[in-house]
Image (cartoon, rainbow, N blue to C red; front, top):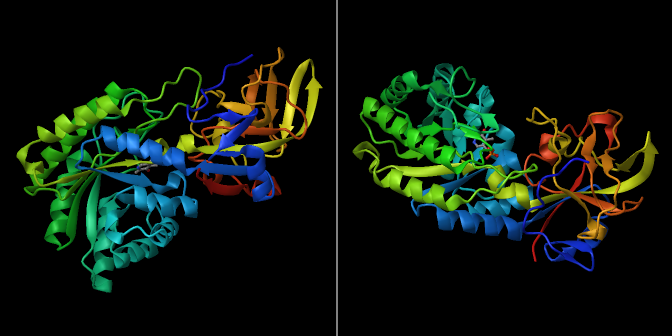
Length: 411
Ligand SMILES: *Cc1c(COP(=O)(O)O)cnc(C)c1O
């Protein structure tokens, strides 16, 4: 037997059936027409954002990093719920604009921006978070050629990282951003070249569940922004302090309480050096806003036994939900929370069951030796924590199965 992560606190059942957006999971599958199906519950997203906003300082802008989940109906809703989008490609630029986000509230980060991507962003009037001196040169030349004053911010590779983060995005040699000791020189250079300098983007890490570490990193981030701004001699219009707020995927993970983080950030902003007095501040989050709201529903095709172990084989797998298989940014495979939707809350049977996907690879394991109620062919399995880095972060063309369906629901 192996433990699994905690089922997010939002979910309940009626008559033993898991409810999503007030509707039974099985009837949502009927409505969608097939499995596997990702269901995103907009009420959970709204409640998460409301809780975060209540905790954070009023001045803080909340940006959504759309790579976490770019499903179009969700993006449209997010355009109304957040203050900006962070994008990482020309494709995401199109998605962000189509969702109705204002161009001046969109910032474009990410290494390896091609010339056509830089051009599209500059013409649309979105902010480029510059990742290198070379990218700055290309952006300035393209802006000159198209006759637009570009909105440019400098992404800084900080000289610290976010302790305890699942994914380190700063500190030491990194492909992201410009090293802190060279960032001020780059900002001064783009200002001298006539660009509309937008400030700093400092993203130190991701998936942290330690509030103390987040607080410490945010203090360091504001201090770094102030130091760099002093060197430039100008107040940055925006300081994007990154994000890093994590979500509980695994056994023992506890949800983060945003309130102490908000209080500390309020104090850090109030006490910030004068050079940041006129600055706006933004936090950019992906998974924290949407991960808990998503459930991946997949149907049991077969139940079998091998060498005394029980396997339930489902019609989904890592081609839709790679992260739950343990192959997306985790070192040791641990179980995501899962449930049998039609026996939600029912008593578990004594023998553990391993839930495997339909792909012909031993990597395709959605839950390893977990304790669940009876599982039979036709049952619907729910894999929780599927609202971020699911459908678009999985190798959906692998083995030629159909892509998963997606659906946005609300009560
Ligand atoms: C991916 C990414 C995010 C979102 O990360 P989460 O862990 O989903 O919050 C934010 N900012 C940048 C620059 C990113 O690359």
